[in-house]
Length: 158
Image (cartoon, rainbow, N blue to C red):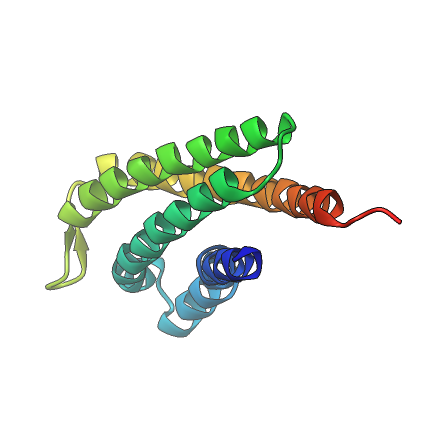
């Protein structure tokens, strides 16, 4: 069961955080360059982030199970739960922010309705993703350490 739990956790993390990292660092800049417009890229991004948010919610459920099922009696468990909480709160904000931003985009003609309020909310949305991503990276480091300790505790001494 431990191997299956870890396998599912890694798959969830790779799909979610790996996909987000690749999209943010490669796809968005390439799309903007090819389309020659941040605006047009934004109409693609709005569709992609809908799915990214669903993947994140699923991955967060897997990560919570991983924290609760890993035999790690140290304070690290509480730090990991705290990081999970940060990621979960960020995800709620991302769902709300996505809905707000999506309501201000008019696909016909690719128009941003009320750009004065759109830009600051979009900036907050991007920063929320960044905080979530950073918490995810810290979570991974602590998760790997917890797995090492779990393995050491279950290995018989000679």
